[in-house]
Image (cartoon, rainbow, N blue to C red; front, side):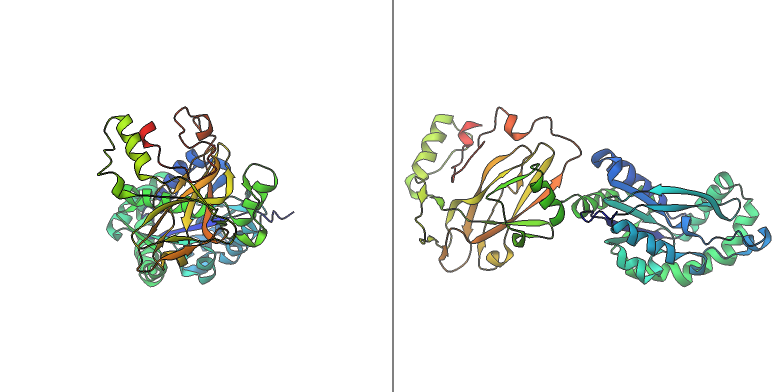
Length: 405
């Protein structure tokens, strides 16, 4: 049965033989698995999709050009990727480097949130590229690749040094120049210096987490349905799109009167900070239905979302302002982009008008979008159980409580 709510992000890692593809793939798998769990990430080697050659003699198998695209069963790989993305499991072929053909065994692979593909010819196939969310080319000098391949094939695959060198000269290098190197143009990210490029690996991890770990619209609806996530009032389906939930502006505001205090010494005595905050911050302004709040150029004001949000201990939220409003000069959420696990309450918005004209803001207008990212496990200190949680259960445009630090 197909799991209609499944979300699968596919990353392709290509490059020359022994360039460091497998090392990058295994490093990403190991480190992401520690963060998000083994059930969310898997690796598929392109080598598993070498064509079945059991009908050929051993002599014929040895002569096969394994660096040419025709050696790969990309049709099956393409079908398997589509199957995984539809929420169904596959039987991953197992290839024998000793027998030069597939074995009778397979590996049962269930759908994952992240699938890492790695192989030399992945980017030569337009269909496979289309299935990838993003692709990587590991750019390592050929002389280094040769030394690595020599060591690997002799020590791990039972081959002689002479056979490795002969294959390199006859097929590996020519096929790299003809097929693999030109496919670099299709990569979204090019990684120099191979699999030990720590900076590149960290960037890739962040990109994968951004692409894969945020809830898609189907997942958001499922979390709302079973009560793991609460947004009150619950947004209709038309306001849940892609990976975000639209939120609206509430009717409560606060303004600043900067001229009433010469300055605020943020690290000064707490009683003085409290006094200064009380002098510069207005009382809460509650608008009647149909009224507008006017934000003038250069002004900062606090507002609040109409919706209240409740997050479980294993989910973090993010609030982004609308791009259409930013293009008019309205900065919807100047800072405090993150919503902590365990949060309950409305979200205070920090408005700033950086434009040239006053802006009329009316309660109920679309003001921003929420997205959600599952954590690797429940937080040990979620917001609702922290002793220093200054804004717990807020419902209005709560002013700064920096004096409570």
